[in-house]
Amino acid sequence: MDENGFWAMIEAAWGVAGGKAKPRQRLSEGKLSEGRAYALQEVLEEEVVPALLERLDALSADELLEFDRILERKLYDIDRADIQERTDGSDDGFLYCRGFIVGMGRAYYEAVRANPDRAITDAECEQMCYLSWHLYHDKFGEMTPSGISRETCSNPAGWPPDSKPDAAPDAAG
Image 1: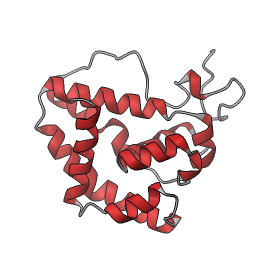
Image 2: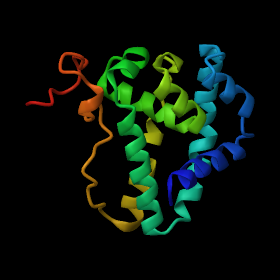
Image 3: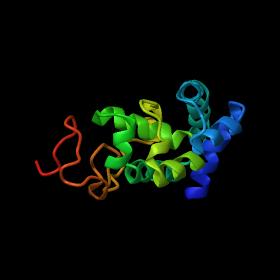
Image 4: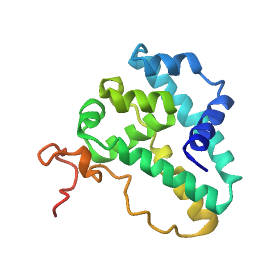
C-alpha cells in the first residue's frame, strides 16, 4: 500500500456510491454550495465509508496498517490553524472535518491543503478518522504506535503558539 493505493481505495469506495465525480470536482474548485457539500457528506457517511470498510476488511495486516499510517499522515498534515479557522472551532469537530476532507478524495484534499478557503464549515466524517484503526484492532489486535497523532493540535508546524483553539489541549502541558 502506497499513497496512490490509498487514494485508489477511496475512489473505488466512491465508485460504489456512483462516483459523484462532478459534484466532488466542483467542491474541489470551490464551486459547490454548502448545502450540496452536506449532501456529499451524507453519501460519504452512508455509502462510501461502508464500501471502504468492506475493501479494507480484505487487506492483510500489513496492508491495513499501511493504509492506516497513510490516513494518519493525511489527517496530521492538514492539522493546521488556517484550515481549522475555516472548518470548526472544537478539537474533535476539527478532526472530524479533516476526516471529511480526506474522505472526499485526493482532489479535494489537495485543494484544501493549497487553499483552506475551499474547506466547508462543519462538514464532518468522524468514521473516516479511525476506520482502519478500529478494523485493525478488531482483526489483529493492538497497533504499534507510529509516532504521530491524528488528533487536533498535534502537528506543531500547523499551529503557531497563539493559534490553538480554546478547546484544544496545550502542547506544552
